[in-house]
Length: 310
Image 1 (cartoon, helix red, strand yellow):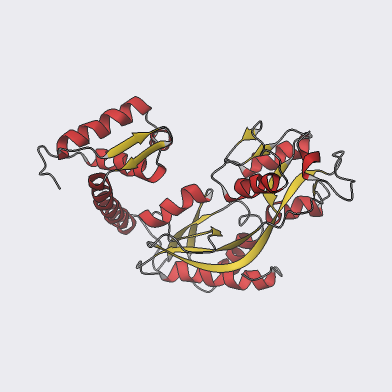
Image 2: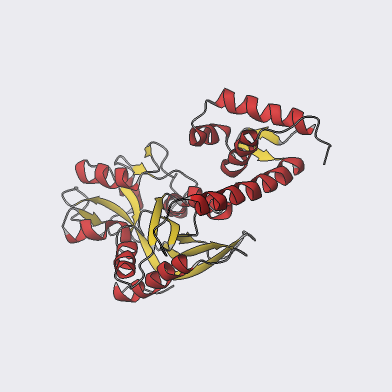
């Protein structure tokens, strides 16, 4: 690694770390509440300080150079140490146990509320903070130590050496419409029938969107391009409930709306997509008492809810 030519600003390290995590200067700047030019200037200043390029810029975003990856790893370690200091310095109730977890939208619908209610009734109930997000934001939070673990979709094959995954249950996906939608009463809805309607969908990098794209490709059709894209599962559900837009969501996410007769899962043959929901921990991180108590309550809640185990 080149010798440092000037002292580094810790803010610049956090800016680099955000760019490496998001692989996008635009998304990193939004997360940091900076303008993209300001973020670019900060990283360029850090590159001058270390004497070499830290990011490779391309059509589809940025990726770290070898030097950038090494420096980001050090920045991540510093960030975790500072987080631990902040936790120790935070005012706490005498003897209180605390943990912070991340949760996906489907898991916040039924599974997590059941577990949190069970934890609340324990003799020494821990204080639990829940951060909400999709997988693209939760996994970096697990790796950085911002959360103790994530409750969300997990891959069928582990590919990140820094993460451990524990399966809990299996959820299936469905094309979803309002109960009064013209397609709702059909016994069978062909993929070609779906193309005539407007859509609200997750972004293409998400597992659900990729599964829907594959459905159309498998039947010789082009995937949906003209749609509302969002990271908000709430928006996807409410747009579908109030309009003729279709969406594609895990069944757990619409559990209560289906029971209330507000949304229906369309009968689309060939749509066999399923996902495994589980816990994601950072490899090598010590599991705290509070985090383990919540994890154990989640394991028990799967059986309580009658979910299909992973």
